[in-house]
Length: 207
Image (cartoon, rainbow, N blue to C red; front, side, top):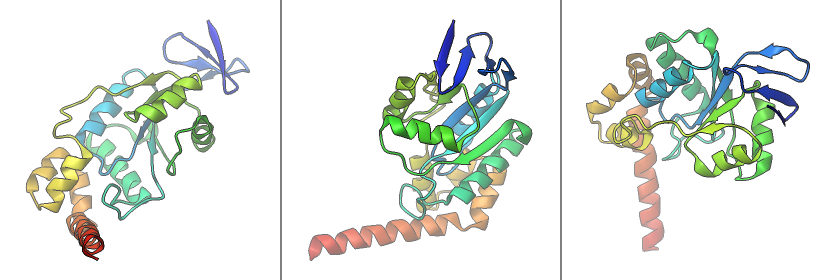
């Protein structure tokens, strides 16, 4: 069965697909996330994806936002962490692609925007349910990554541990990522961002 989708004809035969010119293309999966920071849960998803695909595309979402409570790290820092984490996990970097995606509206147009910014892909992995539904509407196969100890491998949990200077966060990321976060003084940045935000909110509420 052949499905026409965004100028590509996909054949459901293994995970490879054939383009409209009959050329066998590399099987790629798009892994969408904010990666704030990159942790061992992300690495587990990447390993699972690469069991069935030739390559993985890390789509770094909300790439234009940084130094905020939810997105303290820049797009460049997140790309750096992805590469470090893949090396630590012995994943060849020639199987890894990274692209940066700005904040998206929940609109079918966002799907085509991602397609323009990314190499071709034939499957999408993401946990953002509204955006995932847009990809499904556009005809893409979408998988919600299986939670991997979500209670600890979770960006919010890790950032909270970093704010509290709890060394446990170092066990939740790859060793090279932990060293990199130390180099960029990530704990100090998160404390500065959150303390400033809380002070700002307090002042507004008491005015």
